[in-house]
Amino acid sequence: MVDVHRFLKDRFISYTWNVDWTKMLKRVFPFLFCFASLVQAQDDISLNFRDTAGYVTDGTGETYALCNEDVFSTTRAGFTFGRETGNLDTERDKESSIDRRLAGACQRVNNDTKVTFRITLPSTGDYDVTIAAGDYWNSRTHYIDFKDTNTVLWSIAGTATTANQFIDANGNLRTSASNWASNISKRRITMTTTIFRIDIGQNGANGDISNMAHIRLEKVSAASPSASSSPSGSPSACLLYTSPSPRD
Image (cartoon, rainbow, N blue to C red):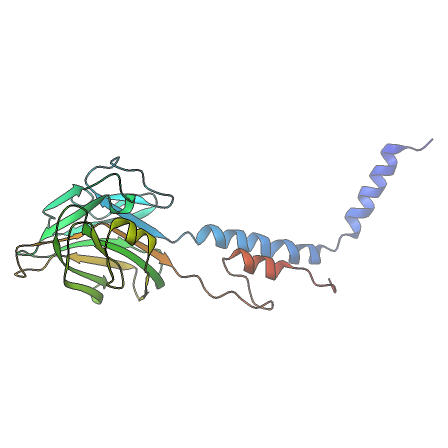
């Protein structure tokens, strides 16, 4: 009669001792490396400005910003941000039936000092930026500077919107909330610091109002590597790097 216990034990021991642990580690380690890279790659920051936290439901990876109450350094949903200087005149819940990102706004009258809103980025480098400046119910004239610490990256300088119009990151005037949502236009910027600032308003411009409804900063991933390079934080790169060679 076959001793099943001894048979299995002998086979297991034989298998264990014949494993090429060098090859095993070479195949397993890249998976662990890529998994860690993917976890660390959650670098997108998406803020929806409004007056009331629960006015609308934010999307995945988004959170709300209460323009006056959230002083720097407020931390929410893993993001650090807040009003750094000055006081915004109003923060508003505008319209809950439209795209959640446009449902509210931070506002500053254009006859006083600018208000600075600060966002801490996870790292320097390239980011794709999405914004919406506008008001569902009212006409506005917008003066907004977007900065890498104190260096102006680009500006909205006196661009007017009528009710339910929104300006995107490349200066396009979208004719409605739905038109903005259907034609997202991103602006590529290079950050040399991790301090991103938004200056809202313009002293002495006029008595109209500048406002911001939404901003998103998406960290641009490095290019996918070749088969001989180290893996990056992208799933395709992990699969490419960990595919075993017939010579293994």
